[in-house]
Image 1 (tube, rainbow, N blue to C red):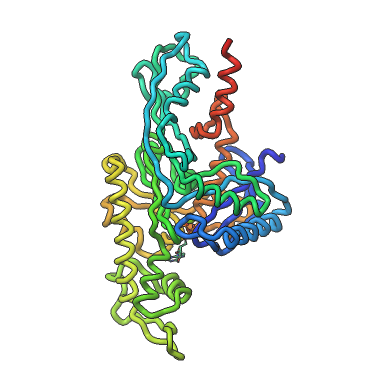
Image 2: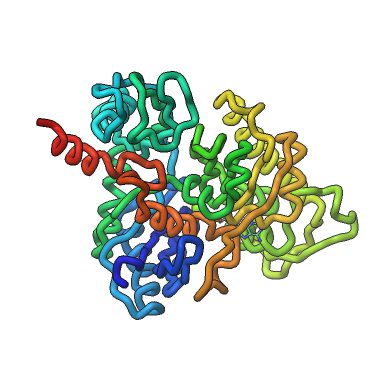
Length: 407
Ligand SMILES: Nc1ncnc2c1ncn2[C@@H]1O[C@H](COP(=O)(O)OP(=O)(O)OP(=O)(O)O)[C@@H](O)[C@H]1O
Ligand SMILES: [Mg+2]
């Protein structure tokens, strides 16, 4: 029973979301506890004030504990920020006995993770792609196969060690141990992408408050990922500047009257809001608001496109882009994205969850729910290897097994 309880903490720039859930089957997750708290001390996905962030995280954890009636001790936690970088790497190992065993797999994975990284960075994900045996690729599990040469490619995600340690400090203040770090867009991928999209080639894009999180899936595997330091708070800032509004009011105006496509708004559409230095509310054109929103949103999608081109996989995405995150609630954003990126765009939010789901029925919770799916996949194993191909977490286990096999 205890084994099937999983806990996720999504530390966002706008909100902290703690979820306590029970895994009921391979596809079904029942939410038992939810703790949503406005974020503090986090800027563009990174902790900038430990006491403030720790306090917000602790409050979110306590809320989730109260609603579930469970006390939690550890969690799977999201990580983002501009300190994240990713690289693809390849490795080859000769097969010692003619039949591939755990030791050969461990050696080739050891080889692929041997990239030179500065001492102040750590690997947070080592996502293997399929193996190839004697040049035959697309092999998911090479264990027990005949062959003389084993190749593997991997997507490796590294992070600043200090940024992750600062976040760990905050989580530990809430008396929670971190089971595993998961990069935001990889959690999103588990929550909102279909297997067909991942196979075909798809970009998942989560536009949150302070960051835009990207991951590219091709042939079912992660081929590229990155975090861009732009998000919905930049749109709100632009509105605040242009209309002389306090930031909180600009945020409300965006959510209530905002639209990403000025062409869809009539000249005569107005709204009222109180500016700095005035007692009574002033009248604003909704079309002007949409123009401000469009300008910044276009810029975000241009940055997304640049990143997709930089990956080199821009021609391998027939399933297009799946857009999520709180900022994807902006009306017209999918159409704008589609015309900027020249690809099909689908809006997505978490599905297939049961229990306390009312509060989670929004694209803002894709990362939070995705973390639970990640936890689910890490629990399942296929022939001693995790179903989720994140080898970072299981290297020690494999190494131990390998040592046991050696004379
Ligand atoms: N209806 C809406 N229209 C436009 N924007 C919205 C709407 N609802 C929420 N947003 C924006 O979504 C953003 C918050 O999204 P989300 O909750 O996904 O962010 P986060 O996960 O806390 O941040 P990040 O992932 O960037 O660290 C805010 O900028 C907010 O203004
Ligand atoms: Mg987020």
